[in-house]
Length: 413
Image (tube, rainbow, N blue to C red; front, side, top):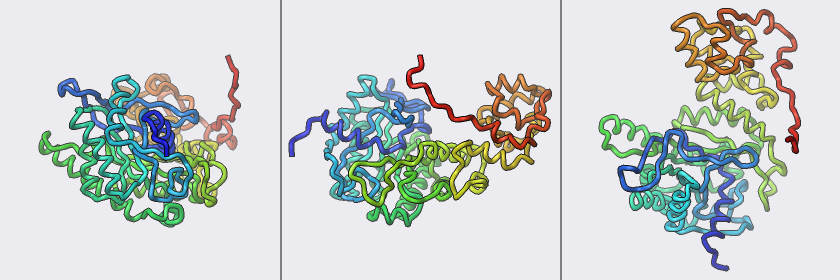
């Protein structure tokens, strides 16, 4: 096989990494390198982001260490039976690329994943070496996200947490049965156990840091996972129920949803077409309701048809339409929990309203200033000078709320 140069490897391994959606860096810590003599820094917002043509957020220098893999997961383009071009970086090549890209201001961090070669332990050790070399030898202060391998030795995962801002383990599919069918070398229970172990280490590290600021950090951005949407027959209900269990059971920071994308040389078990991207979007909205708005999965799926979220309206509005008896909500008196259920009102807006109403009754114009717009929420709220009247009783309320689809102008000036 012809020897590949670094650019050719980068072309192959950056392209191979595009199927992994979990690239955000939110939740990490502020860290600078001005006092250490090193390079790189990260803020609360984390690394810079780029956006793929389909709107998905991706980070620059998001690569695989290698796309060789001993596993044969049907949904993965890098599975052992796939005919894709193969390449592998060395540890030093990834370190050099990260530093070179950083110095050119192309990136603010590294997202590193890998196919599994030789053994899970061997692969995990290489991933840890990259992060360790960046942190220790080059004093790299930028963001590092390592994709970990659940089958690897727990001590290696513990080492990874000392150098990475965030760790992640992809569960990929929502049920153990689906994992067994599409990824026979993987184990759902083992993945969840590894997640739980990581969560325990993260919690222990936080406790130690509260006792002493000299205690080492351990994955300060938490750990996350990714689920593929539409590769198997699982409906939205199954996906959200799994997400909810991961948030409450193993302390996951974030679940990412990645709409299945048909891959070249695909397994016959996979669907021929991708699901609508709107399905992925609705799952993200529902996920937000789980994490920040206090909804349960059963509430979100109350009106779901066949276990799937409504693609025409966002899940929060869908819930409000089915529970009109709980509206309108008085913005001057309602508790925070109910304010969070008002369509069009987010966590920042609720916080601003709670602070402002200490000083007087809020009028609609006040809410407009605090939340920038009241267009989506007017039917659902009461303010000092505003009542929606019989708006909520209208049989055509849903049609008024649904924004009609509009074809974008391809060549608009």
